Length: 106
Image (cartoon, rainbow, N blue to C red; front, side, top):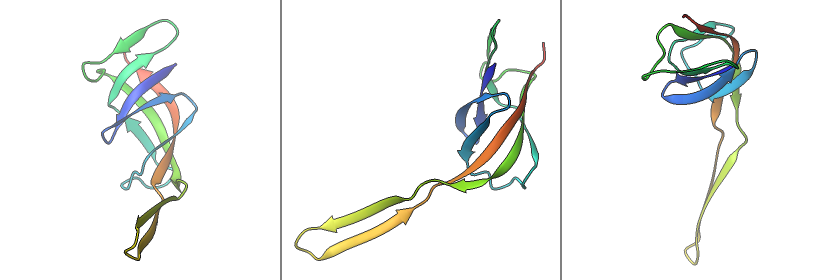
């Protein structure tokens, strides 16, 4: 069983009892329970429900775990014969959430 949910403008495929990595959620304290109401698609072995754009009465219960950073991406700018070199790095921040349950009201 899985569902497609929208979290802050991005769509993610979630499964029960699995953890997913989403863009950083700044407004959520640690170990807080989340209820994601923007469910776009619900699929189990028997049926598929597609929302227009969201499924009424469907929600995904999740728990916020922690924040992590991705591997460092190095940006190097260089112009030949000008003595110009610039090296910068960036680590993309992410939040990890664990899906507890996917609910669908009939």
